[in-house]
Amino acid sequence: QVQLVESGGGLVQAGGSLRVSCASSGLAFSINAMGWFRQAPGKEREFVGGISRSGSHTGYTDSVRGRFTISRDNAKNTVYLQMNNQKPEDTAVYFCAATITGLSETWYPVASQYDNWGQGTQVTVFS
Image 1 (spheres, rainbow, N blue to C red):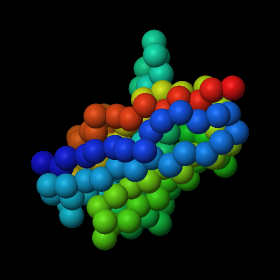
Image 2 (tube, rainbow, N blue to C red):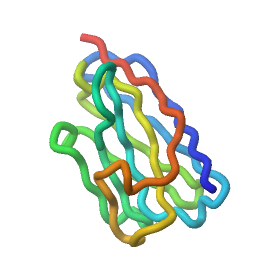
Image 3 (cartoon, helix red, strand yellow):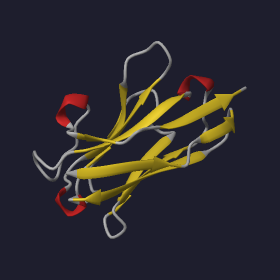
Image 4 (cartoon, rainbow, N blue to C red):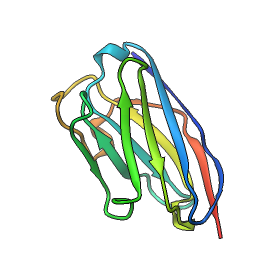
């Protein structure tokens, strides 16, 4: 099993930046793809970004591409989501996800591909 713990959420003014982190433990060495998802009140959980095991391959949903950057430090068992030029519509609970199955050098935009989830961290962007 893999345990995931997010941190770094909070309040940020529109146009500002915030970085959220996700620390993994347990079978962290077995993690392949990791992803960030978010869920706003009254909405379904949506994919934000994904990253492969080595970090060489990343992908984003259209609404955040060019503003958000996902990265990972495998030595620290941590994945990051740097969020720049934030907008009020970025307000949501952000979840970290990981999978120990599948291919190592790919990422997945679908929640069902991940079998380990964190508890989420709230990000609120005010104008």
